[in-house]
Length: 331
Image 1 (cartoon, rainbow, N blue to C red):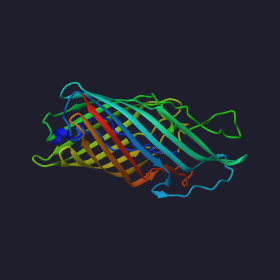
Image 2: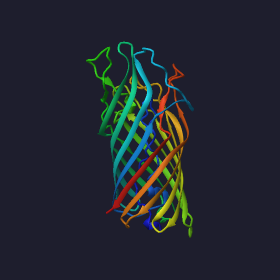
Image 3: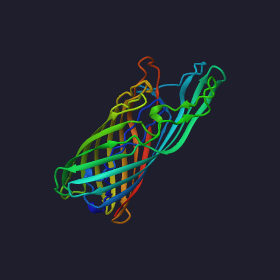
C-alpha cells in the first residue's frame, strides 16, 4: 500500500517568516521520503500552492489593537498581508543514497497598511507583486537503505539570493513624493542573503501496520548578506504520523514548530522574529502510481511575535491558519 503513497521528496522546509508586515506562510513538511512514505527513484516534479493571510496583530503572545493615527509619519500595521507561494520543485535521485532537489518559488504577496501622515492625514499604502523568490538547492544523503520500515539521513544546501529586494509601496510618503517608499525588507520577494541549510530526519514504520511516524529538524542561517540586512536564523522541528485509510488514501498529522531570531542590520525591522507551534492535519491521494494529490491545513496553537526592544507595544501581523495543496508526478 505504501508504494501508492504520495512520493513527494522536496528536501526543504518552508518556515514562517515573522515580520511586522506579516510575511508568514505555510510551513508543513512535504518531504515524504524522509517520513518513510516513499523510496522510489527517478525524477519527481511537484507543484505546491500555499496560502496564508496575516491579519492578526500580535505583541509577544498577546493579540493587540493597532494604535490610532496621530500624525507620526510612520506605518501602522493595522490591515493585512495576503501571502501566496507557488513552488515548482524538482528532485532527482542520483543513486540509492544521494539525491538533489531544486525549489523555485513564485511569491504572490499583497500587503496593505495605513501610513500615518502628518501632512495629508492617514491613508492606505499598498504593495502587490508576483515575482520569483529565493531559489533553494538542497542535497540529501541517506545513512541506511533498509527499505520502508525505518531510515535516517541528512539534508544540506543553499538558499540563493535570486529574489528582488527593491519593491516599493504606493502612494509614496507625501512629505517626499519623489522618493519611492520601500517595502519592508522581510516582506520582499527575496532576503538578499545566501543561506546555509542543514537538517536531519528519522522515520519508523511499524511492520505489518498501516501507520508510522517521523521526526525532522532543520536550521537555516545567512552566510552572506547585502544592503545592511541579515535575516534571523531559522530553526524548524517537525513531528508527524501517517495512517493508511484505504489503498492510495492516507491521513496525515504533523506538529510543526518554527523559531526565527530577530533580523539585524540598519535595514531590519527591530520588531521581527518569534516562534510558532502549529498542528497540521491533511491527506494524500494517489490518482495513479505516478501522480499524487495532497493537502494540509495548518492551525496555530501558539504564536509569539518579538516586539521592538525600544517599543514593547509594537507588534507583528500573524496568520492564525494557512494551507498547502499540491500535485506531483514521478517520471
